[in-house]
Image (tube, rainbow, N blue to C red; front, side, top):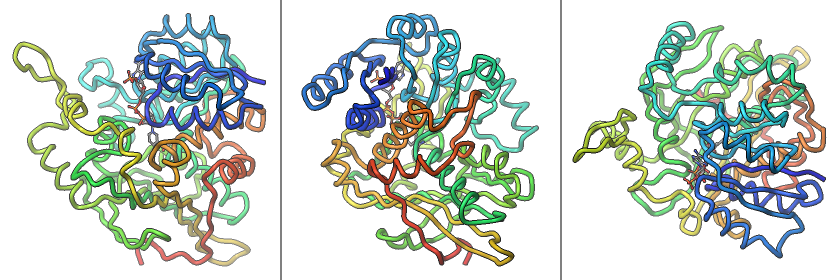
Length: 420
Ligand code: NDP
């Protein structure tokens, strides 16, 4: 019996909410709150009569702590699921602390305005100290650790697929498969085709910022940063086939480097088609990926936000996307004194997702882990105050929940290695 406040009602939230409604014995009451209440009302009306979960809706601007506090105080939830954008992570964490409620999200904090001088001063110092220049990093949210611990509350960070399930795969490998882990390669393959020359599978602004940033990886106790898309490999993905993939900076590398300190190297690769890369390079060359406002006909416009308005809404890709995703990890290390290579991954079919929850597989593979993470917190299977990432918890009940609710794992005991 629990009450959950979901903030955001976009592509990922739609899946998470529909999945919560399939587990109404635990998610007895849900409040869907977002900037555009009309979207929450449409979803609530569609789900009414299909689920025993009691659904209400609300409007909230999650950039404003006082609005969040008022909503949380009036609804009194057991958990706040932040499935809005990474820009709102800190305001929602503040509100949860003020109200004494557990918190979770699916992506780590980054500011909407990367020109803000106060933020830039901290960012530039951090770039020099840490050795990577991505706009997003865990330091902002880890700074809340003591306050959550002292309040006896849990903040679960990054509980989507990657970050999220990939860290549970690492925790599983460490617990069950290896005595020591030497290398971790996280591979994210989307073999889906939506028929557009260019579209992003989740929020375009967040997605394009991520993939146009320099790549970086963890090796021998330090970050190695390389120009965007400069490290390319080919890999033969089960049920998808051979794909080209590129090394990116990704947030889970940062927490895994701390929580699996023996790992000598941790990298993240994502597949991209040539059309996507050509469009992205061209948009970058003309300045359309910039987050710095420009003046146009007397008003300030942020180029990447204008581009977002032109691109297809990721939520509209569901009916037209065919093919599969394959996301997982390859590990090398030692077991019982012997060298071992092992991989674990999930394969998800875009059209099957659409039939079940009216969404493509990218939102599905993020929304289902968000629901399963919430389930772990609400049922007390994951209980540890503080600000935590997925690999800090027992992977067993979480992976069992994923198997059951739509993202079953597969294991390959003799995978090919990324570098041959
Ligand atoms: P969408 O853009 O589809 O949805 C975002 C939602 O947040 C919208 O409903 C939007 O409202 C709402 N929102 C934005 N700003 C505010 C605000 N100030 N106050 C209240 N609501 C607000 O994004 P996605 O669903 O694609 O992505 C959701 C999250 O999931 C993102 O953080 C993304 O980075 C993350 N993600 C994580 C992945 C993982 O594997 N871990 C993979 C993919 C995504 P409105 O309708 O008014 O715009």
